[in-house]
Length: 510
Image 1 (cartoon, rainbow, N blue to C red):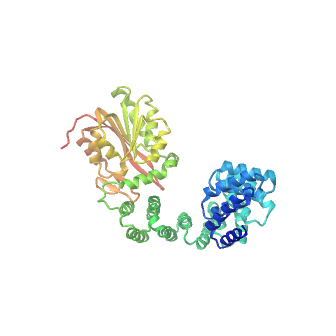
Image 2: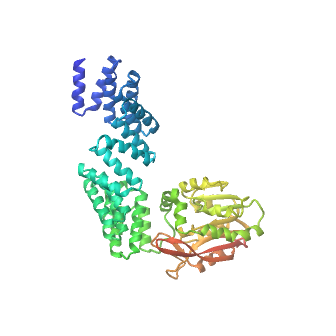
Image 3: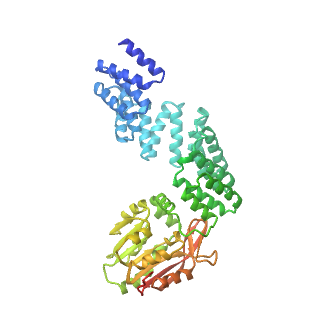
Protein backbone atom coordinates (compact mmCIF):
# COMPACT_ATOMS: atom_id res chain seq x y z
CA UNK A 1 0.00 0.00 0.00
CA UNK A 2 2.69 2.50 1.06
CA UNK A 3 4.75 1.55 -1.98
CA UNK A 4 1.82 2.31 -4.31
CA UNK A 5 1.24 5.67 -2.58
CA UNK A 6 4.92 6.55 -2.92
CA UNK A 7 5.02 5.51 -6.58
CA UNK A 8 1.91 7.61 -7.28
CA UNK A 9 3.51 10.60 -5.56
CA UNK A 10 6.74 10.16 -7.53
CA UNK A 11 4.84 10.01 -10.82
CA UNK A 12 2.95 13.13 -9.78
CA UNK A 13 6.14 15.05 -8.99
CA UNK A 14 7.65 14.03 -12.34
CA UNK A 15 4.58 15.20 -14.26
CA UNK A 16 3.61 11.65 -15.28
CA UNK A 17 -0.03 12.31 -14.48
CA UNK A 18 -1.62 9.40 -16.32
CA UNK A 19 0.53 6.86 -14.48
CA UNK A 20 -0.17 8.60 -11.18
CA UNK A 21 -3.90 8.65 -11.91
CA UNK A 22 -4.04 4.90 -12.47
CA UNK A 23 -2.35 4.25 -9.14
CA UNK A 24 -4.70 6.64 -7.32
CA UNK A 25 -7.68 4.85 -8.87
CA UNK A 26 -6.22 1.57 -7.62
CA UNK A 27 -5.89 3.05 -4.13
CA UNK A 28 -9.45 4.39 -4.28
CA UNK A 29 -10.77 0.90 -5.08
CA UNK A 30 -9.07 -0.55 -2.02
CA UNK A 31 -10.12 2.41 0.17
CA UNK A 32 -13.63 3.30 -0.99
CA UNK A 33 -14.32 5.29 2.19
CA UNK A 34 -11.51 7.81 1.45
CA UNK A 35 -12.48 10.44 -1.14
CA UNK A 36 -8.96 11.86 -1.30
CA UNK A 37 -7.64 9.14 -3.61
CA UNK A 38 -10.48 9.81 -6.05
CA UNK A 39 -9.78 13.55 -5.85
CA UNK A 40 -6.08 12.95 -6.54
CA UNK A 41 -6.90 10.75 -9.54
CA UNK A 42 -9.36 13.35 -10.83
CA UNK A 43 -6.74 16.08 -10.43
CA UNK A 44 -4.32 14.07 -12.55
CA UNK A 45 -6.84 13.52 -15.34
CA UNK A 46 -7.69 17.21 -15.18
CA UNK A 47 -3.99 18.05 -15.65
CA UNK A 48 -3.75 15.93 -18.81
CA UNK A 49 -6.93 17.54 -20.21
CA UNK A 50 -9.33 14.62 -19.83
CA UNK A 51 -11.95 16.69 -18.01
CA UNK A 52 -14.86 14.30 -18.51
CA UNK A 53 -13.02 11.48 -16.74
CA UNK A 54 -11.94 13.96 -14.06
CA UNK A 55 -15.55 15.06 -13.58
CA UNK A 56 -16.71 11.46 -13.18
CA UNK A 57 -14.13 10.84 -10.48
CA UNK A 58 -14.98 14.08 -8.65
CA UNK A 59 -18.65 13.07 -8.67
CA UNK A 60 -17.80 9.66 -7.20
CA UNK A 61 -15.73 11.38 -4.51
CA UNK A 62 -18.68 13.68 -3.78
CA UNK A 63 -20.86 10.64 -3.15
CA UNK A 64 -18.32 9.54 -0.53
CA UNK A 65 -18.02 12.95 1.18
CA UNK A 66 -20.47 15.66 0.09
CA UNK A 67 -19.09 18.03 2.79
CA UNK A 68 -15.55 18.28 1.38
CA UNK A 69 -14.94 21.95 0.61
CA UNK A 70 -11.97 21.14 -1.63
CA UNK A 71 -14.07 18.72 -3.61
CA UNK A 72 -16.98 21.15 -3.94
CA UNK A 73 -14.63 23.84 -5.27
CA UNK A 74 -13.08 21.37 -7.73
CA UNK A 75 -16.54 20.43 -9.00
CA UNK A 76 -17.48 24.08 -9.40
CA UNK A 77 -14.28 24.78 -11.31
CA UNK A 78 -14.50 21.82 -13.67
CA UNK A 79 -18.16 22.48 -14.43
CA UNK A 80 -17.16 26.04 -15.35
CA UNK A 81 -14.39 24.76 -17.62
CA UNK A 82 -16.92 22.43 -19.29
CA UNK A 83 -19.25 25.45 -19.75
CA UNK A 84 -21.93 23.96 -17.49
CA UNK A 85 -22.41 27.31 -15.80
CA UNK A 86 -25.50 26.45 -13.80
CA UNK A 87 -23.83 23.49 -12.08
CA UNK A 88 -20.67 25.53 -11.51
CA UNK A 89 -22.76 28.25 -9.85
CA UNK A 90 -24.58 25.75 -7.63
CA UNK A 91 -21.37 24.20 -6.28
CA UNK A 92 -19.74 27.62 -5.79
CA UNK A 93 -22.74 28.74 -3.73
CA UNK A 94 -22.51 25.51 -1.71
CA UNK A 95 -18.86 26.35 -1.00
CA UNK A 96 -19.81 29.84 0.18
CA UNK A 97 -22.45 28.34 2.46
CA UNK A 98 -19.66 26.36 4.13
CA UNK A 99 -17.13 29.23 4.11
CA UNK A 100 -18.57 32.62 3.21
CA UNK A 101 -15.24 34.22 2.24
CA UNK A 102 -14.00 31.37 0.05
CA UNK A 103 -11.79 33.03 -2.56
CA UNK A 104 -12.07 30.27 -5.20
CA UNK A 105 -15.86 30.12 -4.95
CA UNK A 106 -16.09 33.89 -5.45
CA UNK A 107 -13.83 33.63 -8.50
CA UNK A 108 -15.94 30.84 -10.02
CA UNK A 109 -19.13 32.84 -9.47
CA UNK A 110 -17.50 35.89 -11.05
CA UNK A 111 -16.32 33.80 -13.99
CA UNK A 112 -19.78 32.32 -14.52
CA UNK A 113 -21.37 35.77 -14.54
CA UNK A 114 -18.68 37.05 -16.89
CA UNK A 115 -19.19 34.13 -19.29
CA UNK A 116 -22.93 34.84 -19.31
CA UNK A 117 -22.33 38.53 -20.04
CA UNK A 118 -23.54 39.72 -16.63
CA UNK A 119 -20.53 41.98 -16.11
CA UNK A 120 -22.05 44.03 -13.30
CA UNK A 121 -22.58 41.00 -11.09
CA UNK A 122 -19.21 39.56 -12.11
CA UNK A 123 -17.57 42.77 -10.92
CA UNK A 124 -19.28 42.42 -7.53
CA UNK A 125 -17.68 38.98 -7.01
CA UNK A 126 -14.27 40.09 -8.28
CA UNK A 127 -14.33 43.10 -5.93
CA UNK A 128 -15.07 40.77 -3.01
CA UNK A 129 -12.00 38.75 -4.04
CA UNK A 130 -9.95 41.96 -4.09
CA UNK A 131 -11.21 42.90 -0.63
CA UNK A 132 -10.16 39.49 0.70
CA UNK A 133 -6.74 39.72 -0.97
CA UNK A 134 -5.68 43.08 -2.45
CA UNK A 135 -2.46 41.47 -3.70
CA UNK A 136 -4.23 38.84 -5.81
CA UNK A 137 -3.27 39.13 -9.46
CA UNK A 138 -6.40 37.17 -10.46
CA UNK A 139 -8.68 39.58 -8.62
CA UNK A 140 -6.92 42.64 -10.07
CA UNK A 141 -6.81 41.49 -13.69
CA UNK A 142 -10.42 40.28 -13.56
CA UNK A 143 -11.56 43.67 -12.28
CA UNK A 144 -9.63 45.34 -15.09
CA UNK A 145 -11.18 43.09 -17.74
CA UNK A 146 -14.71 43.44 -16.39
CA UNK A 147 -14.46 47.21 -15.95
CA UNK A 148 -13.42 47.41 -19.62
CA UNK A 149 -16.51 45.46 -20.65
CA UNK A 150 -18.65 47.84 -18.60
CA UNK A 151 -17.12 50.86 -20.32
CA UNK A 152 -15.30 51.94 -17.15
CA UNK A 153 -12.11 52.56 -19.10
CA UNK A 154 -10.17 54.71 -16.61
CA UNK A 155 -10.80 52.24 -13.80
CA UNK A 156 -9.88 49.35 -16.08
CA UNK A 157 -6.58 51.06 -16.94
CA UNK A 158 -5.87 51.66 -13.25
CA UNK A 159 -6.29 47.95 -12.41
CA UNK A 160 -4.51 46.83 -15.59
CA UNK A 161 -1.48 48.89 -14.54
CA UNK A 162 -1.64 47.30 -11.08
CA UNK A 163 -1.69 43.86 -12.73
CA UNK A 164 1.27 44.81 -14.94
CA UNK A 165 3.28 45.87 -11.89
CA UNK A 166 2.67 42.44 -10.34
CA UNK A 167 3.24 40.32 -13.45
CA UNK A 168 4.99 42.40 -16.13
CA UNK A 169 5.52 39.33 -18.33
CA UNK A 170 1.79 38.56 -18.64
CA UNK A 171 0.12 39.80 -21.82
CA UNK A 172 -3.48 40.05 -20.54
CA UNK A 173 -3.26 43.35 -18.63
CA UNK A 174 -1.43 45.02 -21.53
CA UNK A 175 -4.28 43.90 -23.81
CA UNK A 176 -6.92 45.33 -21.44
CA UNK A 177 -5.05 48.63 -21.14
CA UNK A 178 -4.53 48.78 -24.89
CA UNK A 179 -8.20 48.22 -25.62
CA UNK A 180 -9.18 50.89 -23.08
CA UNK A 181 -6.78 53.44 -24.56
CA UNK A 182 -8.21 52.64 -27.99
CA UNK A 183 -11.72 53.35 -26.74
CA UNK A 184 -10.47 56.65 -25.30
CA UNK A 185 -8.97 57.49 -28.74
CA UNK A 186 -5.44 57.44 -27.31
CA UNK A 187 -3.98 55.55 -30.24
CA UNK A 188 -0.29 55.82 -29.36
CA UNK A 189 -0.80 54.55 -25.81
CA UNK A 190 -3.05 51.76 -27.12
CA UNK A 191 -0.52 50.69 -29.74
CA UNK A 192 2.27 50.75 -27.14
CA UNK A 193 0.36 48.42 -24.82
CA UNK A 194 -0.66 46.00 -27.55
CA UNK A 195 2.85 45.96 -29.03
CA UNK A 196 4.19 45.05 -25.60
CA UNK A 197 1.63 42.25 -25.37
CA UNK A 198 2.68 41.00 -28.82
CA UNK A 199 6.32 40.98 -27.68
CA UNK A 200 5.32 38.82 -24.71
CA UNK A 201 3.27 36.53 -26.96
CA UNK A 202 5.08 36.90 -30.31
CA UNK A 203 3.13 34.03 -31.88
CA UNK A 204 -0.31 35.51 -31.18
CA UNK A 205 -1.95 36.33 -34.51
CA UNK A 206 -4.88 37.85 -32.58
CA UNK A 207 -2.59 40.41 -30.96
CA UNK A 208 -0.99 41.24 -34.32
CA UNK A 209 -4.43 41.88 -35.80
CA UNK A 210 -5.34 44.09 -32.82
CA UNK A 211 -2.22 46.20 -33.29
CA UNK A 212 -2.93 46.36 -37.03
CA UNK A 213 -6.46 47.61 -36.37
CA UNK A 214 -5.16 50.37 -34.10
CA UNK A 215 -2.63 51.59 -36.66
CA UNK A 216 -5.35 51.40 -39.31
CA UNK A 217 -7.61 53.61 -37.19
CA UNK A 218 -4.73 56.10 -36.85
CA UNK A 219 -4.13 56.08 -40.63
CA UNK A 220 -0.65 54.55 -40.29
CA UNK A 221 -1.02 52.08 -43.14
CA UNK A 222 2.62 51.00 -43.20
CA UNK A 223 2.58 49.73 -39.61
CA UNK A 224 -0.98 48.46 -39.95
CA UNK A 225 -0.06 46.22 -42.87
CA UNK A 226 3.17 45.08 -41.19
CA UNK A 227 1.17 43.64 -38.28
CA UNK A 228 -1.74 42.39 -40.40
CA UNK A 229 0.69 40.50 -42.64
CA UNK A 230 2.51 39.12 -39.60
CA UNK A 231 -0.82 37.69 -38.39
CA UNK A 232 -1.31 36.00 -41.77
CA UNK A 233 2.20 34.52 -41.68
CA UNK A 234 1.76 33.29 -38.12
CA UNK A 235 -1.39 31.41 -39.08
CA UNK A 236 0.26 29.92 -42.16
CA UNK A 237 -1.83 27.09 -43.58
CA UNK A 238 -4.49 27.74 -40.92
CA UNK A 239 -5.51 31.07 -42.47
CA UNK A 240 -9.29 31.03 -42.91
CA UNK A 241 -11.42 32.55 -45.66
CA UNK A 242 -12.47 35.24 -43.16
CA UNK A 243 -8.81 36.06 -42.50
CA UNK A 244 -8.22 36.53 -46.22
CA UNK A 245 -11.31 38.69 -46.63
CA UNK A 246 -10.32 40.89 -43.68
CA UNK A 247 -6.79 41.33 -45.04
CA UNK A 248 -8.26 42.15 -48.44
CA UNK A 249 -10.50 44.82 -46.94
CA UNK A 250 -7.50 46.38 -45.23
CA UNK A 251 -5.67 46.55 -48.58
CA UNK A 252 -8.79 48.02 -50.21
CA UNK A 253 -9.06 50.74 -47.57
CA UNK A 254 -5.34 51.44 -47.80
CA UNK A 255 -5.74 51.91 -51.56
CA UNK A 256 -8.33 54.56 -50.86
CA UNK A 257 -5.58 56.44 -49.01
CA UNK A 258 -3.23 56.38 -52.01
CA UNK A 259 -0.86 53.65 -50.79
CA UNK A 260 -0.32 52.04 -54.22
CA UNK A 261 3.29 50.88 -53.87
CA UNK A 262 2.72 49.56 -50.36
CA UNK A 263 -0.40 47.69 -51.48
CA UNK A 264 1.32 46.11 -54.47
CA UNK A 265 4.12 44.92 -52.18
CA UNK A 266 1.65 42.98 -50.02
CA UNK A 267 -0.46 41.82 -52.94
CA UNK A 268 2.62 40.18 -54.44
CA UNK A 269 3.57 38.49 -51.17
CA UNK A 270 -0.02 37.38 -50.58
CA UNK A 271 -0.35 35.87 -54.04
CA UNK A 272 2.99 34.12 -53.73
CA UNK A 273 2.09 32.54 -50.39
CA UNK A 274 -1.47 31.53 -51.40
CA UNK A 275 -1.16 31.03 -55.15
CA UNK A 276 -3.97 28.47 -55.30
CA UNK A 277 -6.49 30.29 -53.14
CA UNK A 278 -9.45 31.56 -55.22
CA UNK A 279 -10.42 34.24 -52.69
CA UNK A 280 -6.91 35.69 -52.72
CA UNK A 281 -6.81 35.64 -56.52
CA UNK A 282 -10.17 37.38 -56.76
CA UNK A 283 -9.40 40.11 -54.23
CA UNK A 284 -6.02 40.78 -55.86
CA UNK A 285 -7.71 41.06 -59.25
CA UNK A 286 -10.27 43.49 -57.84
CA UNK A 287 -7.71 45.74 -56.15
CA UNK A 288 -5.66 45.80 -59.35
CA UNK A 289 -8.85 46.50 -61.38
CA UNK A 290 -8.22 43.56 -63.71
CA UNK A 291 -11.15 43.80 -66.07
CA UNK A 292 -10.90 40.29 -67.52
CA UNK A 293 -12.82 39.03 -64.45
CA UNK A 294 -16.50 38.47 -65.29
CA UNK A 295 -17.95 37.39 -61.94
CA UNK A 296 -17.19 37.40 -58.23
CA UNK A 297 -15.67 34.23 -56.80
CA UNK A 298 -18.55 32.32 -55.18
CA UNK A 299 -16.47 31.14 -52.22
CA UNK A 300 -15.63 34.77 -51.52
CA UNK A 301 -19.30 35.81 -51.66
CA UNK A 302 -20.43 32.98 -49.41
CA UNK A 303 -17.78 33.60 -46.76
CA UNK A 304 -18.32 37.35 -46.94
CA UNK A 305 -22.02 37.13 -46.21
CA UNK A 306 -21.71 34.27 -43.73
CA UNK A 307 -19.50 36.60 -41.72
CA UNK A 308 -21.95 39.50 -41.87
CA UNK A 309 -25.16 37.53 -41.31
CA UNK A 310 -25.68 38.23 -37.61
CA UNK A 311 -25.29 42.00 -37.92
CA UNK A 312 -26.21 42.50 -41.57
CA UNK A 313 -29.44 44.47 -41.05
CA UNK A 314 -27.79 46.85 -38.56
CA UNK A 315 -24.79 47.41 -40.84
CA UNK A 316 -26.98 48.29 -43.82
CA UNK A 317 -29.04 50.66 -41.70
CA UNK A 318 -25.80 52.48 -40.83
CA UNK A 319 -24.92 52.61 -44.55
CA UNK A 320 -28.32 54.18 -45.29
CA UNK A 321 -29.22 51.27 -47.57
CA UNK A 322 -32.57 51.96 -49.22
CA UNK A 323 -32.67 49.54 -52.19
CA UNK A 324 -35.39 47.24 -50.73
CA UNK A 325 -37.67 50.25 -50.23
CA UNK A 326 -36.98 51.54 -53.74
CA UNK A 327 -37.84 48.15 -55.24
CA UNK A 328 -41.01 47.85 -53.16
CA UNK A 329 -42.13 51.33 -54.23
CA UNK A 330 -41.60 50.55 -57.92
CA UNK A 331 -43.57 47.32 -57.64
CA UNK A 332 -46.35 48.82 -55.54
CA UNK A 333 -48.53 50.18 -58.36
CA UNK A 334 -47.45 48.08 -61.33
CA UNK A 335 -47.71 44.67 -59.72
CA UNK A 336 -51.23 45.09 -58.40
CA UNK A 337 -52.65 46.25 -61.74
CA UNK A 338 -51.01 43.60 -63.92
CA UNK A 339 -51.17 40.36 -61.97
CA UNK A 340 -53.60 38.15 -60.11
CA UNK A 341 -53.51 37.58 -56.40
CA UNK A 342 -51.50 34.86 -54.74
CA UNK A 343 -48.62 35.63 -57.04
CA UNK A 344 -45.24 33.98 -56.81
CA UNK A 345 -42.35 36.36 -56.17
CA UNK A 346 -38.75 35.14 -56.37
CA UNK A 347 -36.16 37.14 -54.40
CA UNK A 348 -32.70 36.45 -55.84
CA UNK A 349 -29.85 36.88 -53.35
CA UNK A 350 -32.46 37.42 -50.66
CA UNK A 351 -29.92 37.67 -47.83
CA UNK A 352 -31.64 38.30 -44.50
CA UNK A 353 -34.94 39.08 -46.23
CA UNK A 354 -34.78 42.87 -46.39
CA UNK A 355 -36.19 43.05 -49.90
CA UNK A 356 -38.93 40.51 -49.25
CA UNK A 357 -39.81 42.29 -46.02
CA UNK A 358 -40.21 45.65 -47.81
CA UNK A 359 -42.31 44.18 -50.64
CA UNK A 360 -44.53 42.22 -48.27
CA UNK A 361 -45.56 45.51 -46.66
CA UNK A 362 -47.58 46.18 -49.84
CA UNK A 363 -48.33 42.58 -50.83
CA UNK A 364 -48.99 40.56 -47.67
CA UNK A 365 -50.84 37.74 -49.45
CA UNK A 366 -48.27 36.78 -52.07
CA UNK A 367 -45.99 33.74 -52.01
CA UNK A 368 -42.37 34.72 -51.54
CA UNK A 369 -39.45 32.48 -52.47
CA UNK A 370 -35.84 33.31 -51.63
CA UNK A 371 -32.47 32.00 -52.76
CA UNK A 372 -29.06 32.90 -51.37
CA UNK A 373 -25.61 31.35 -51.33
CA UNK A 374 -25.15 31.98 -47.58
CA UNK A 375 -26.91 29.55 -45.25
CA UNK A 376 -26.30 31.93 -42.35
CA UNK A 377 -28.08 34.76 -44.14
CA UNK A 378 -30.96 32.41 -44.91
CA UNK A 379 -31.17 31.45 -41.24
CA UNK A 380 -31.74 35.13 -40.42
CA UNK A 381 -34.30 35.46 -43.24
CA UNK A 382 -36.15 32.41 -41.93
CA UNK A 383 -36.77 34.15 -38.61
CA UNK A 384 -38.87 36.84 -40.32
CA UNK A 385 -41.68 34.58 -41.56
CA UNK A 386 -41.67 36.08 -45.07
CA UNK A 387 -40.82 33.28 -47.46
CA UNK A 388 -42.76 30.17 -48.32
CA UNK A 389 -39.48 28.50 -49.31
CA UNK A 390 -35.82 29.40 -48.94
CA UNK A 391 -33.10 27.80 -51.08
CA UNK A 392 -29.37 27.67 -50.28
CA UNK A 393 -27.67 27.96 -53.66
CA UNK A 394 -25.93 30.41 -55.92
CA UNK A 395 -28.50 32.10 -58.13
CA UNK A 396 -27.16 30.81 -61.48
CA UNK A 397 -27.21 27.17 -60.35
CA UNK A 398 -30.65 27.62 -58.81
CA UNK A 399 -32.18 29.18 -61.94
CA UNK A 400 -30.55 26.64 -64.22
CA UNK A 401 -31.97 23.72 -62.23
CA UNK A 402 -35.41 25.20 -61.51
CA UNK A 403 -38.50 24.50 -63.64
CA UNK A 404 -40.73 26.93 -61.72
CA UNK A 405 -41.95 30.25 -63.11
CA UNK A 406 -42.78 33.42 -61.19
CA UNK A 407 -44.94 36.50 -61.54
CA UNK A 408 -42.09 38.72 -60.37
CA UNK A 409 -38.36 38.40 -59.75
CA UNK A 410 -36.37 40.84 -57.60
CA UNK A 411 -32.63 41.29 -57.11
CA UNK A 412 -31.65 44.00 -54.64
CA UNK A 413 -27.92 44.83 -54.71
CA UNK A 414 -27.15 41.39 -56.14
CA UNK A 415 -25.93 42.15 -59.66
CA UNK A 416 -23.05 44.06 -58.13
CA UNK A 417 -21.41 40.66 -57.59
CA UNK A 418 -21.60 39.74 -61.29
CA UNK A 419 -19.92 41.43 -64.24
CA UNK A 420 -21.21 39.69 -67.36
CA UNK A 421 -24.98 39.64 -66.81
CA UNK A 422 -26.00 38.04 -70.09
CA UNK A 423 -26.14 34.44 -68.76
CA UNK A 424 -28.14 35.58 -65.73
CA UNK A 425 -30.70 37.60 -67.69
CA UNK A 426 -31.23 34.69 -70.07
CA UNK A 427 -31.95 32.40 -67.11
CA UNK A 428 -34.29 34.94 -65.51
CA UNK A 429 -36.18 35.36 -68.80
CA UNK A 430 -37.10 31.67 -68.70
CA UNK A 431 -38.39 31.88 -65.13
CA UNK A 432 -40.80 34.84 -65.47
CA UNK A 433 -44.33 34.52 -66.80
CA UNK A 434 -45.30 36.52 -69.87
CA UNK A 435 -46.26 39.95 -68.58
CA UNK A 436 -44.34 39.34 -65.36
CA UNK A 437 -41.96 41.78 -63.75
CA UNK A 438 -38.25 42.01 -63.07
CA UNK A 439 -37.07 44.63 -60.57
CA UNK A 440 -33.42 45.05 -59.63
CA UNK A 441 -30.66 47.50 -58.77
CA UNK A 442 -27.27 48.14 -60.40
CA UNK A 443 -24.33 50.31 -59.40
CA UNK A 444 -23.50 52.98 -61.98
CA UNK A 445 -20.28 52.54 -63.97
CA UNK A 446 -18.67 55.96 -63.60
CA UNK A 447 -15.15 54.62 -64.15
CA UNK A 448 -14.91 53.86 -67.87
CA UNK A 449 -16.97 53.35 -71.05
CA UNK A 450 -17.16 49.57 -70.75
CA UNK A 451 -20.25 47.48 -70.08
CA UNK A 452 -19.06 46.77 -66.57
CA UNK A 453 -16.18 47.58 -64.26
CA UNK A 454 -14.65 45.62 -61.37
CA UNK A 455 -13.84 48.02 -58.53
CA UNK A 456 -11.23 47.46 -55.82
CA UNK A 457 -14.05 46.71 -53.36
CA UNK A 458 -14.66 43.49 -55.29
CA UNK A 459 -18.01 44.75 -56.63
CA UNK A 460 -19.08 45.40 -60.19
CA UNK A 461 -20.61 48.56 -61.62
CA UNK A 462 -22.58 48.47 -64.91
CA UNK A 463 -23.43 50.91 -67.65
CA UNK A 464 -27.10 51.70 -68.14
CA UNK A 465 -26.82 51.21 -71.91
CA UNK A 466 -25.53 47.66 -71.33
CA UNK A 467 -28.46 46.83 -69.04
CA UNK A 468 -31.01 48.19 -71.53
CA UNK A 469 -29.39 46.21 -74.35
CA UNK A 470 -29.52 42.97 -72.35
CA UNK A 471 -33.11 43.48 -71.26
CA UNK A 472 -34.22 44.02 -74.83
CA UNK A 473 -32.25 40.99 -76.00
CA UNK A 474 -34.04 38.85 -73.37
CA UNK A 475 -37.55 40.08 -74.24
CA UNK A 476 -38.01 42.75 -71.54
CA UNK A 477 -39.30 46.28 -71.80
CA UNK A 478 -38.21 48.88 -69.24
CA UNK A 479 -41.24 50.35 -67.49
CA UNK A 480 -39.52 52.59 -64.96
CA UNK A 481 -36.06 53.42 -63.79
CA UNK A 482 -34.87 55.65 -60.98
CA UNK A 483 -31.45 56.99 -60.16
CA UNK A 484 -30.50 56.84 -56.46
CA UNK A 485 -27.64 56.75 -54.01
CA UNK A 486 -27.89 53.05 -53.22
CA UNK A 487 -25.59 52.86 -50.19
CA UNK A 488 -22.24 54.03 -48.90
CA UNK A 489 -18.89 52.30 -49.26
CA UNK A 490 -16.55 53.79 -46.67
CA UNK A 491 -16.95 57.55 -47.01
CA UNK A 492 -18.19 57.37 -50.61
CA UNK A 493 -21.77 57.29 -51.91
CA UNK A 494 -22.52 54.52 -54.40
CA UNK A 495 -24.74 55.81 -57.15
CA UNK A 496 -26.92 53.52 -59.20
CA UNK A 497 -30.28 52.70 -60.69
CA UNK A 498 -33.34 50.74 -59.67
CA UNK A 499 -35.02 49.34 -62.78
CA UNK A 500 -38.47 47.82 -63.33
CA UNK A 501 -39.02 45.82 -66.51
CA UNK A 502 -41.78 43.62 -67.87
CA UNK A 503 -41.43 40.54 -70.02
CA UNK A 504 -43.36 41.32 -73.21
CA UNK A 505 -41.73 38.90 -75.68
CA UNK A 506 -41.08 35.18 -75.39
CA UNK A 507 -37.51 34.78 -76.63
CA UNK A 508 -36.01 31.48 -77.75
CA UNK A 509 -32.25 31.44 -77.22
CA UNK A 510 -29.98 29.35 -79.43
